[in-house]
Image (cartoon, rainbow, N blue to C red):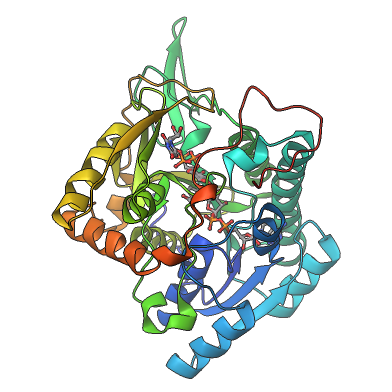
Amino acid sequence: SHQNSSKPSKPKRVMVIGGDGYCGWATALHLSNKGYEVAIVDSLIRRLFDHQLGLDSLTPIASIHNRLRCWQSVTGKTIELYIGDICDFEFLSETFNSFEPDGVVHFGEQRSAPYSMIDRNRAVFTQHNNVIGTLNVLFAIKEFRDQCHLVKLGTMGEYGTPNIDIEEGYITINHNGRTDTLPFPKQASSFYHLSKVHDSNNIAFTCKAWGIRATDLNQGVVYGVRTDETEMHEELFNRLDYDGVFGTALNRFCVQAAVGHPLTVYGKGGQTRGYLDIRDTVQCVELAIANPAQPGEFRVFNQFTEQFSVNELASLVTKTGEKLGLDVKTISVPNPRVEAEEHYYNAKHTKLIELGLKPHLLSDSLLDSLLNFAIKFKDRVDTKQIMPSVSWKKIGVKPKTVAA
Ligand code: NAD
Ligand code: USQ
C-alpha cells in the first residue's frame, strides 16, 4: 500500500535526535556509512545522568566531538552536530531551518524505566522531557518541513503483557455486531513506558490532523555493543550500560557473568519480552527511513526479532559462560518492579521482515563475543552499581539520591 507510484524518492538528509546515545550513535554512523547526510541533535543529558548518579558505561566512550572527528578521519564522512535540548523550541527550529531534514529519527528521550521511578522529580522530568520534546518535533515538522518523515522510537512496553496476542499497532475488533480497526490497547508499567504511550497518541493525532507522515517503532530490549561502524576505531566505541538504572537485561547478565556477580533474575523470572541485536536496530531504522510512511499515515512496527523470558536469558548466559571457563551463578532478587512474573506473551513482528530485515538471531557466537567484550573491560566495572536500587512501590515525592 505504501509502495505506490507516488512514493517519494529516497530521503537524503536525516536528523538523528539522541545521536550520542546507545541506539542513536550506532544508527547515526550506520546511516552516514550508507550515504545519507546525517546530523546529530543531542543535549548530552545522558552523560549528565551518569555523573549525577555515579554511573559509567562499561566501555570508555569518547566525547561527541572526538567521536565525530574520528569518524571523519576514518571514513572521510562528515556528521553535523547540534547540541541542545529539543524541549527548547527555538533551538529545535534553528536545527530544522539550518539542516532541512527529509527524515528525522527520534531517539532523544529519557529511556530508563527505573530512572523514571526514582522519585516524583524524575517521574515528572521523564514525562516532560519525552512528551514535550516529541510535541516540539511534531510542530517543527508541521511548520518547517511538512514532507519530512518522522521515525519515532517507541517501545514494546507500551502494550504491557495482555493475555492475547499482541498485534502491530492496531487490532480489528468485532463488538456488538460492528467491526473497527483500533489502536491496540496500551498497558504500560512505568512512568517512562507511559511517556511513550502519550507520545504515540500525540503522533497519531497529528498524522490525522496535519497529515504528518510517521513511523512508530515499538522496539524491544536491545542487546550487544558492536556494529560494523563502531568497531572501526576505539574512539567510535558505543556505550554499554550494566548498572541497575540504565543497564538492560541481557547486557547486564553478560557483564555480571564476566565479573563473577550472580545473574540478577527479578522475582520468578518468567517476564517475557521481545529482544533484538543492536545491529538489527540500525538495520530496522534504515529500512523505515528508506521506505517512508505516506502523508497522514501513522505506521506502527514491532521492532524485535525474538522473545525470551529472563530465566531463559540467564540459562543461555550460564551455558556460554561455562564454555569460556566462567563460574556463573543466578540469584533470585526480590522484584523491585510491579509486573507479571508469569504470563502469556506472543507479539507479532512481521512488518520489518516484509520490508527486508535480515535478523541477527541470538547465537552462541554473539553471546561469546559479548561476554569476551565484557571480560576485556571488566576492571572498569563498579560492582556496587549492579544490584537494583529503585523500587516501584517506594517512589514518593521526596528527592532521592540513588548512588551508594
Ligand atoms: P540513551 O539514553 O543511550 O540515548 C538517548 C539520547 O537522547 C542521549 O544521548 C540523550 O542525551 C539524548 N536526549 C534525551 N533527552 C533529550 C532532549 N530533550 N533533547 C536532546 N537530546 C536528548 O538511550 P537509548 O538506549 O539509545 O534509547 C534510544 C531510544 O530508543 C529511546 O527513545 C528509547 O526509549 C528507545 N528504546 C531503547 C531500547 C534499549 O534497549 N536501549 C529499547 C527500546 C526502545
Ligand atoms: N530484569 C531482570 N533482571 C535484571 C534486569 C531486568 O529480571 O537485572 C527484568 C525486568 O524486571 C523486566 C525485564 O527484565 O521484566 C526487562 O527489563 P530491562 O531493564 O531489560 O528493560 P526495560 O525496563 O523494559 O527497558 C528497556 C529499555 C527501554 C525500552 C524497553 C523495551 O531501557 O528504553 O523501552 O527496554 S521493552 O522492554 O520492550 O519495553
